[in-house]
Amino acid sequence: MTTTAVAAPPYAYHNGAFVEAGAVRLPLSTQALHYGTGVFEGIRAYAQEGASGPAVFRLREHLERLERSAATLRLQLPCDVDGLTEIVLDLLRRNGSGGDTYIRPLAYKLALEPGTPFGVKLSGVSGQFTVTTVKMGSYVPSEGLRCKVSTVRRVPSVSIPSAAKVTGTYVNNALAVEEAHADGCDDALMLGLDGNLTEASTSNVFVVGRDGSVATPPVTADILPGITRASAIELLAREFGITVEERPVAVEELAQAQEVFTTGTGVEICAVTSIDHREVGTGRAGAVTSRLRDVYDEVVRGRRPAYASWLTPVRSA
Ligand SMILES: Cc1ncc(COP(=O)(O)O)c(C=O)c1O
Image (cartoon, rainbow, N blue to C red; front, side, top):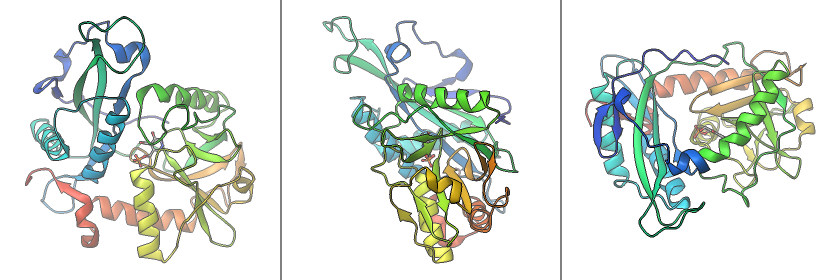
């Protein structure tokens, strides 16, 4: 996968203030750098139809997940979801939010508080909060993803809660992606310790059977409960009358599938066109994937008034 991110914008929100992004410095002793003790979000703002300016897709849901992730690591955020919303919108305005933008809030452990002995821990360690943005359009190949079923198993929730978007957990995902790339693929499909499908490296996975049924692993299957996943489930039901089965998905089902697609803030809705070098269905995006992708595009760009509540306008906040 190649990214199409362009010039970095000038401001970040860092440690309680809007500052020049390039001027931010972190101490080498930053705890999260050593132990992976940070949590983050990936959020997108989209240019909207007409002259209304951009809007952020499902901002509240992302910030609520950030709150839950932060609580998991005993990280204190600077304010509640309403306050975080204002910070994100203010930053977008300062950075000239025209065009599509990726927003990255990051809360992380900073330093041992006085009296806290050296060692890896969560309590007695101060936290810090930063938000950055980068201009970013769609970055997955338009022809779809070639995936590999990874030998790297997804870290189970009993080890690191998968519902929390923890920075350190992504070593797991990076190892899987590295293996996929070495095998000539774009992304990894990761299995859980039970051998069932969990998710891709930065997205959730849906499988369309030859009978037209659509299934995705349940939130109990060591997945990150994706906000795009929830949106896709709702769109499939409301727009196409398809009830997605949230159930364990056996790896064997991938070989039988008519379509496989992934959902995520970054990848949006993306067809998986081959798995382990074998074509999925026709080897192109199938009907369900294509129709869902089209609706999703319309929703995020404000062309579907029924979903206006999923969009937070940047300018009129
Ligand atoms: C591991 C993982 N799974 C799933 C997703 C999809 O989540 P969302 O749709 O909330 O972006 C992401 C991206 O955030 C991810 O990193």
